[in-house]
Length: 122
Image 1 (tube, rainbow, N blue to C red):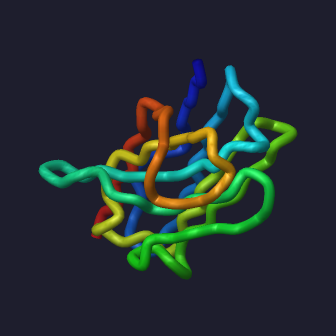
Image 2: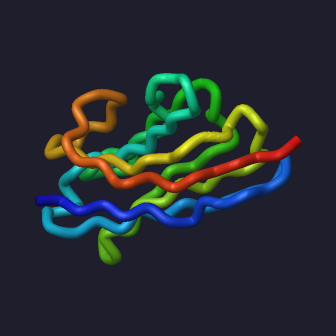
Image 3: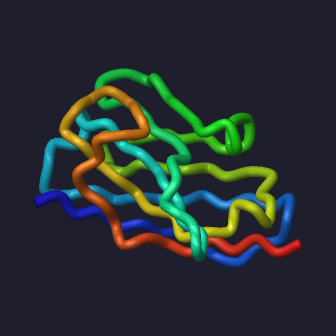
């Protein structure tokens, strides 16, 4: 059973930055694609970013491209989401996700963390 624990959320002002972390355990990490998703009140969960398991391919939603960066440290079993130039529209609960496939896509994730709240004030 894969365990995922997010951290790093908080309350910031528009234009500020945050770095989210996701610590993984219970499964081989380096071969698994990892993703970040978010969910705002009254909205469906939406894809944010993904990173491949065996290379450095990344994939971003258009709404965050150029502002957010996903990265991973396999030695630490940790994936990160660096969020710059934050906007009020980025306010949501952010979730870390993992899947067995090494290919980064917005679909097919099997394991999910509990989420961390990000609130951006204007």
